[in-house]
Amino acid sequence: MIITSNATRMELMRLRRRLKLARRGHKLLKDKQDELMKQFMTLIENIKEMRENVDSHLTQAFRSFVLAGATMSKEALETAVSFPNRRVLVDVKTRAVMNVHVPVISLRSEGSIQCYGYASTSGELDIALDALDKVLADLVLLAEREKSLYLLAAELDKTRRRVNALEYTLIPNLVDTIKFIGMKLGEMERSNLSRLMRIKEIVAK
Image 1 (tube, rainbow, N blue to C red):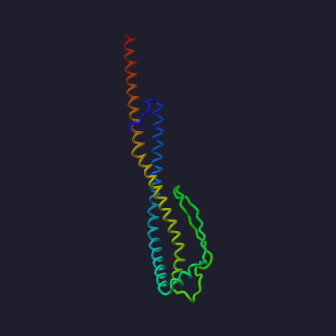
Image 2 (cartoon, one colour):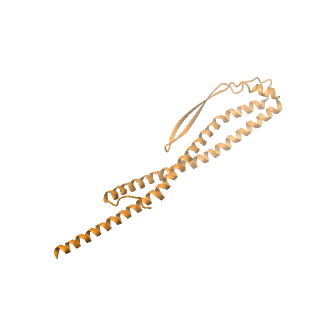
Image 3 (cartoon, rainbow, N blue to C red):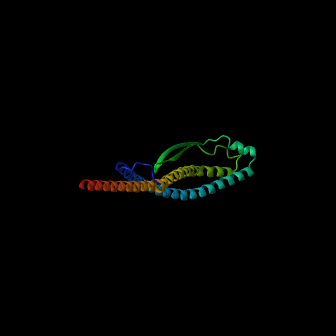
């Protein structure tokens, strides 16, 4: 599609500069898209492994909780976990990945996760709480990676739309417009040349 513009040499020069800039921007965005896709696919593989690991540890922890509930009364189990002594502090920062600000989450914990007497509790409860304590850091890291994946996916989609807009709309339109203006200027030059030659003939007679 031809962009509405004046058929002048100044406009032709302006459109040529714009085309050069558009092609350069397209190359940069294409490189960014390729790198984002690489980061995206690497993150997917990493998240898949982490999720399998976290799911496995959580399954073991919940199984131990079920066993603890089977060997302890409901009241004793609720009393044992009602007053936690463990304090977890979460620090969230960001870092830039291809101009995308992804989260970086760090944990600091204080106190013991077992805050009850051993006389009235089951050993399965100890196992369950230890399993949860060990998987907590991996669980938070998984959340960090999945949020990063979501942000990278959004940026990848936005970059892909920009690349397509340049590649299939703006650049072809600029090329067509430059050709059209070039043809118009050529026609005008030939018309002027014919007019001058006709005037020269008339003057010569």
